[in-house]
Length: 443
Image (cartoon, rainbow, N blue to C red; front, side):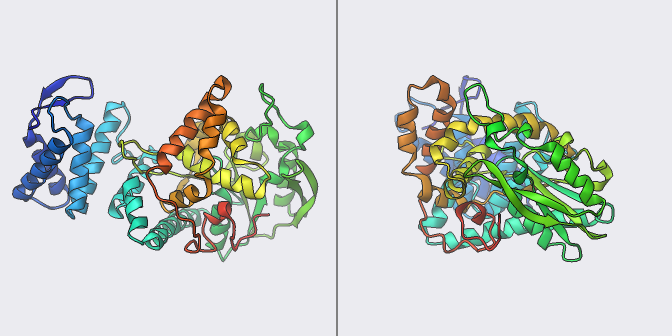
């Protein structure tokens, strides 16, 4: 029998099953249900599960364990809409405890509203946990998960296109910004596809990196590609001015294998109604596009806003998802081994916090690029490497951050199956930007 529970502040208090019934019934009412008998049945099953997990009675279940059990029972018994309302209610209270604004009712806190949209979608499609993703794979339904993920991303693109359409007569430069490996390049191309009545001209800012011998180096001797000072901002602004004036511009070509600008990647010129598309980590960094008046810019932000919990009830980290993407991409296209990506990721995070998060309020649209289907693929590509990474990093105080990330990824990989075949991934998928085989030309 469960007699007590452990509160978040460490207090042990009497266990009252009626509180579970009340919480379930409240969630059911939020979606149009009022069956107290069903809520009591859910409560009984939750209590039975907790008792089975704590058979001796010498350890008390935590509040989080109780709530996790409620979510699981609701979903397993087919009460998906009630489960969704319960999860949102639980998330709302987590925000309140952290002193943060409600994501459901906030009209100006865009990131939290996007989190709510993602959480709602994930619950509806039973992929808001790593266990749910595992169930898709083990049931032979990975292709279904791929289809759902791709459809969600297409909806994000369509919503962005609709917002852009309202301002398109004034806009000459569309800036797609976001942290490393969030999918900016593919999103840029898809925005271009979605506006057939305009010629949207991509300008790949990666081609404006300085040569490696004049590149910023941090205090550890690492080349820092993540700072805006790694870009020839003066040349970029000169080209933007000339393009908007109707001149032809020779865009440089940066070779990541040699670390040098080599020749010309393309010669571009704008027509009267053409719009420049820029995808860049630092797209919202003011000096980067200071030659363009603000009223001529449209700013879109992209991030992997995953709302997926692990078996401990913790949300997986967006930065970890993007690091896996970048490991695979760097290994294939940039002659960079994944351990180097892991060791240098602190530079990525430092730049994101300094140059992106602080400017997020400038975004007019936010696109979520996370796909639940990507985690099994990344495991297949990288799972064998991480034990070696941990072995190499143990004892290196300079790389404690990298060690923590490596261990966290190993825990994530332990909870999802690997999918080695990538045949189910469409050729125009955002994931092809990282795993290869895309119909798009990224060079």
